[in-house]
Amino acid sequence: MSQSGKTAVGGMITALSVVILMPTALEIFVYALPAMAGMLVMFSVIELDKKWAFGIYAAVSILSLMLVPNKEAAVLYTAFFGYYPILKAVLESRLPKVPEYILKFAVFNVSMLASYAVLIKVLGMPFDELMGLEGETGFLAEYMLPVVLILGNITFAFFDIALTRIVTTYLRVWQKKFRKLFPFK
Image (cartoon, rainbow, N blue to C red; front, side, top):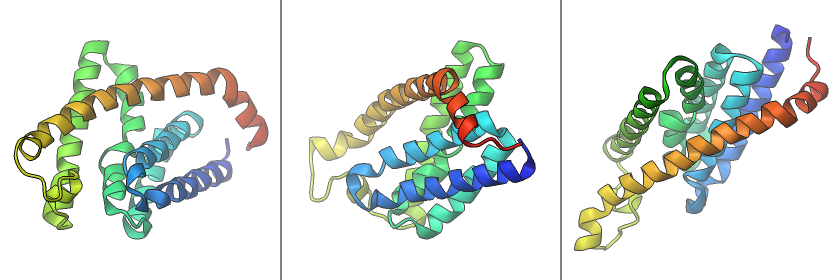
């Protein structure tokens, strides 16, 4: 694909990713939409290359932090979902399965903890509000963070599997159709 073709596809992926992140004003989409926008980065890894994918990730991160109304979603995209597809491609091509998964889960956990540290310490968002604990006390408030981390890791495992299956389906079914639709040379 030519440089102008890569630029056009990269611009479309960037714009679509930012548009996908916009409805995160609705709390139900705070995690799902950054994950969906991150999936678009995987297509840029496949169709363009890792350098272009990283540029798209950087552009979407900057634009989302400036434009997206829900800063939690923008931070989650920037801190994990945006670059994870690039990291996934690198790890899966270079490491055996066990070290690959250990590293994937370590990156996920560090990224999530760092994300919430930024949201709380830098952006001043209340911990209770982020965890959905406004006014809660007792058992629920005390154990919410470990429960959220456990559920987050389970969800991450499904996300990783889903991303692999989406890539497989894309390569088997949709890639030829995409290349016919966008015949950049």
